[in-house]
Image (cartoon, rainbow, N blue to C red):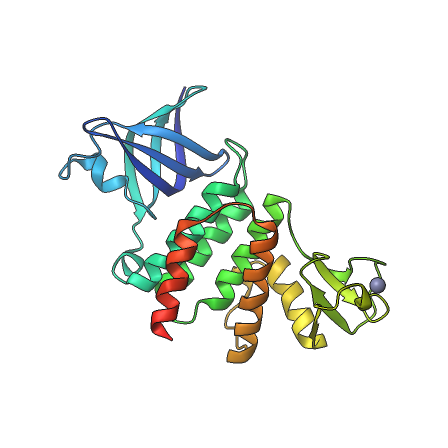
Length: 248
Ligand SMILES: [Zn+2]
């Protein structure tokens, strides 16, 4: 079946002498994998359209196993991402996270839109911490390990204030926080922001001003949370960390 699919390239691998295997996050189809014949030849048209991070329209011959990409057209190449090592590292991480968590051929159009918006943001702006966190939280939800951020994870109370517990997987109210000595107190504002990041789409947010120390706090919580629940080793995540450490 020949289909025209819009999507973002999540991963490419060399295949035999001259081909590539390309994994695309496609509209109405979700994650799928197809062979791009001749894509390893540097000057081929196929090589140009099968680079990581490309958003394009692909004509794909779909089968139950590996499909074949017949043609493609770039809608957006996200050049600013390609030309900056930090931006590349951020998007490589988002792509790998998405690649690992998505199930094969299960449509996730809302998430695809979030990825597209987030890549846009990263391409255009310098401040990317919060959009990254927003996308990661949505990805965790798809992966089935989302933290509970709108009520106490133990007694379901919605009464502020809350603390965040990695072990319990979300918020703990005042009467429940004793079950985790390591629960981290969060101001009401931060709890509300955290919840907002989880369920609001990035395109509804114009500008985000969050204090540097609070960004670091969110980052720390998310990293610890992923270490606890994420389950997938991500090479790109390690690289991003090393890069950030260098930056200081
Ligand atoms: Zn409680």
